[in-house]
Length: 296
Image: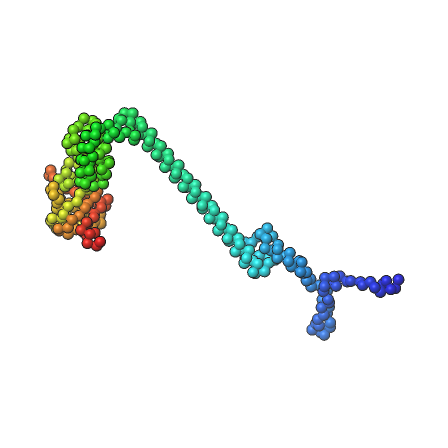
């Protein structure tokens, strides 16, 4: 019995936690034994703590200034990972919004095209020439089509911004409506010259039934501005004629010189004592072909 007792070892609570009594000496010289054990984590406990700390679900709140229970390095990794997840989420949300916007634009474009086709079909029920599927050139004889194409090619060289195909279609429609080739050419040319944005001869400015024209010509004379609100005033001329032009200070126009060619788009028209003139406004555009050619 005694041998059995001798072979058994009684383990105290302190020894179970791996702690030994820690002795210190107080100020009076007496030995003081620490009663609170110092706990030490096992290797398995430390490993599990690292796993729990690195798992997002293991952190209750990472928005605090410091995250309790983790080292500084672990805290930095956790916060960096959360920041990266936020950036990924934000990019995904933005991409989804852009995708919705792009799909909405596509749908709107398709609807607009469908409405345009429906409008053209309804207009064609009243006037066949307005049909998008109607090409009057198909209804001409070979001789008429040859003459139309020849005149369309000539007008395309004279008119700015109009293709030969567009002009030939208009000429063909005029012929289909009963006009002969010379009359169709004159009518179509007049219509196209009067179209908004089309550069017209200066002597035709007074014939345009709208308040905005585009011309190109040479500044042949400049006068002293009669009013502080006027930037420049003078005469502009082309082969067909000349007219007075005025540019206003508030429009911040470009400065022209005598003898210089200038193209003025979107000039407003006005009448005074039976004469028409043009004015450069804030909506007008001034181009200088010779200046651009020199810089090139």
